[in-house]
Image (tube, helix red, strand yellow):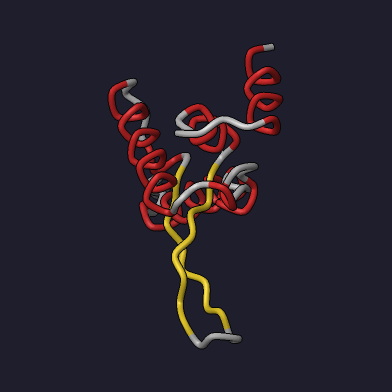
Length: 117
């Protein structure tokens, strides 16, 4: 008489594939970059980076992983043959950057009013 064997299948999901999926999901949420900020042409790069640092600090203090909302990227500019640093941001990250703006103007005031609604 033949006996049946039970075959065990592992339900372990590869951590690599989970990380890839999570990163793809986060990348799809980071739709904005520094060019989407309404005030970048009127503010120094130092002030923009200060607003970025404050936004990352807000995430940290609020217990939010800043990597979910901000990602440093490098863009090659063929015209000047140089690599420039930019940041990809989620909507929340972009709004945090706007709130940390060191200068106010009409466009920024409108944006802040929209955020308040």
